Image 1 (tube, helix red, strand yellow):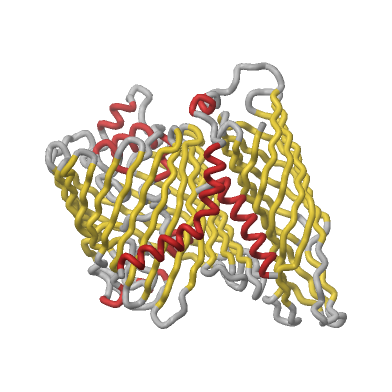
Image 2: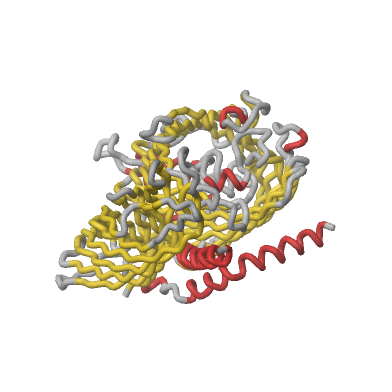
Length: 398
Length: 217
């Protein structure tokens, strides 16, 4: 029986791997769909995520977001010129403030007696970036609300108040070489913006402190080399000060990406992290490509080896496939297929999630998401009924 | 120590990723050149009927309702089917954007059932099944590289649930099931297409989905 499952797994791996083959970045790695393959194009943090630079703001307004609220007489360039923190009023070159809010409404067990709804305050951030005229030297700080693990039904403890969530200095000592030092997200895989995804959850990139799996940001030193055709980053991290000592992860990670065709990138990542509570080793390969202008396909396949304190080691795998289809400017149809298995054992259940919905930018600075997700589990212990979840998300970025 | 740990991790990674990289290498060596892909930037200027054939490999799954009958008592449970499919599809476009797709597939895999019911105790795993699926779908090309389609499906599958010595009579779903299927096809190259399908089945069964890779010519 085990052989059968193994065979089925191999065949499935072949199907899934061949196809979807196999990126990271918490920004929008799917925007390779617009021909932007490096996160550095739009973000101060070249690994993606966090505040947008001037170009990123203008791009969101002038190319990605819908322009339905603007009169036809207004050019895209005019809309882009209004994308600053104070609109078209230009701030001094040395300061770029930012405010971000992200919240999610999750309705679980849709249309059953167990239906429940909870609203998650995912991100409430305010901060500023300070830079020299050419962006060779830069420092950024973001204060934000850190949710407690209890908020996510992951036990008590942790902290819940406004804290510096991200702070770092960025220097370009040699052309195309960037060095980051401070508290920032760990370098690894595709930075999928959805923290509730199986990929992010089991990678240990949670948004709250004192979680066994780990928090996404850590005090780190990152070296990042970016060229037109490839990039590589190495991260030595020393723990997140918001975590209790037992949960603080130290370790290293690396991610590389190479262009294998026009707007096609193949990458790989490794990470080894250790805290008193957990030892975590991961490796992943990823692939992302433009399918048509605004539309993309991306895939990540990875291994996760966890050794919790006082427990046996488990080695499992996951995959993430995301297809984004541009319907019209500012509106996208998004389909995501995810799988996670904690252990390569027949008795370890395969968890699958299949979600489909819409990603919408009805106007600059505003993002809305609405997705319906089917969850199914293949277990040799019991065959469960499918569960359905509705996810609605709002993101405001000033 | 750091060095030996790094070596050990590298060894594990190579051992586990190597097969995927090998398959990946084969796939990328067959990827179309940039020039070839640019030919998909616009719809071809033709008034002739266009036809495509796609052979695809899929990973698929659906759920059925399981009825357990002991003779004196009845209970209900679930059965999860999963497996692979080899499909053959013919698309015909009489206009640039819309057309018809007919497909037939051979399916095989395993199923798990039971374990959640409250009255009768029954559970079985890794039970083999095989079957086929035919679909007829209206297709719409959103762009030269993105196709959506929707239409009826018929799923035929053969499975015999073991009673595990209980003497229960077990029946799930239906040997022949009908449903509605939607598909999204994304052409990664001129020849290779990623395919995502989702559907719903009518008779004591529910959501069907699949992910696959197709070779189009």
